[in-house]
View 1 (tube, rainbow, N blue to C red):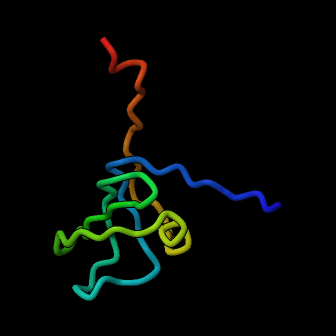
View 2 (cartoon, rainbow, N blue to C red):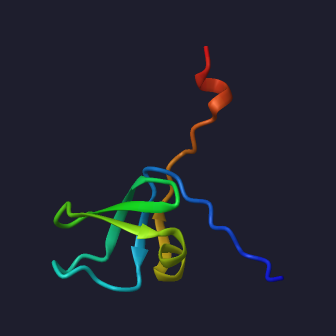
Amino acid sequence: MSTARLIEVHVGDVVRLRKQHPCGGSDWSVVRLGADIGLRCETCQHRILLARGVFERRLKTFLSRAVPEDPALGAS
């Protein structure tokens, strides 16, 4: 068995991917989480969906991290 390294990603994170978008931008903001990761190009606002495995392979670095929401604090 292989030990998969899970990358913690939150909605609102800004990431840089290894491949540039055709518009010339390489910075993306995370807009959706699940089996697929929804990303929005910071340059042209185009939205894409990447499978989590593809996203983790293409991820180069985090430019800014969003504060994760704590479900225990939101339930009032």
